Length: 131
Image (tube, rainbow, N blue to C red):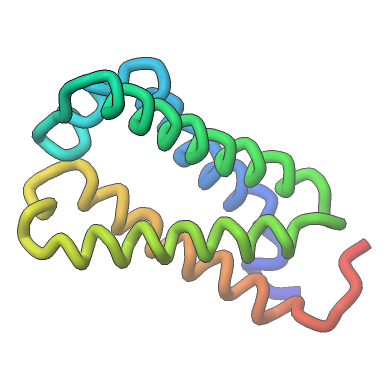
């Protein structure tokens, strides 16, 4: 059994807690935008969209935590989460230098590491029964 197979539960717990932290955007949308991006949006639509974004990312964090303790759904959780994180990283990279000096760039780097760890686990266990 490889290192990633032995430790995926803890990798997922850490990744889940990190991702769950975006509930901050649900609770304090304008402060979260300022903290992460160095700028903010205004108005009721921005408030609704940012809160929804924060809640959905927090929901993904909860899903990662759930999957860490339920091997029967682990692969599904890792694939869905991996796709979500790859899209996020692509959007940050697509922003060019606009986001480099802000916390969102660090979040993207952490997500790259998470995606690589999740992909390594999926690669090692694909086609094998986990239950």
